[in-house]
Length: 281
View 1 (tube, one colour):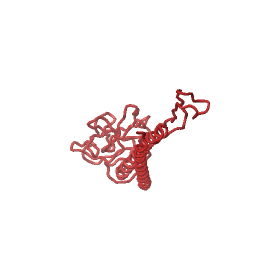
View 2: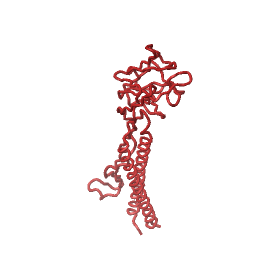
View 3: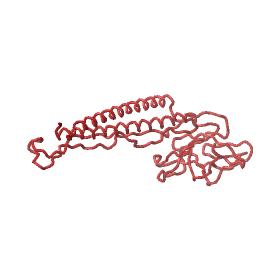
């Protein structure tokens, strides 16, 4: 028959194994998020003006582990009969967690298209303003077209706004767009594209469909040091080779944590079985 002390050790070991399961699971979840993020970057390598999403991972908060005991003699000169003693064992990590998914706003390379409706921005902190059903949004995708009313719109049909807050309407015929966003036709200005920059790019977040939304602290203002290039498109900032390597790393990371989960689960089962055989009747 096992002693009560041995039984307690088995229970303590079981709890440690359960923590190991959660630690390995947190790593697997982080690896899955990494794979999803990289896959999304890869899927948009041909999207004009697309900005790569990064992934920041940090250690989850660690726990201080103590051994609580009341039996005297185990800790010399510290334990008294019936008086608990907390002996510090060490710190226990609890895995990994996602810290943030920021956007890499670095300038993408320009590709000449010759299409007068294709516009590219030169300058990392600069965006076109567009009117969507959800409100004003921002984009680097300058692959525009004209709707039936001659308004400049995005591929999703959202109006590109001018400096006056209204749409950019271009009558039929040749036109030119200056580096400051001024739209002219036959030497007459018909509008100026609203270009926006932000003091706090961290507060600018992806919404989907190559659009960004101001979360309330991005501090938008008229863009300076940004120029428009007509007949060009800005290519995606994603790097195919690096993304493929990152995807392989994420897969191996997930696989390693999956094996750890299986090992922890097996050890937990053995611990429970041994505890059941050792518990005093």
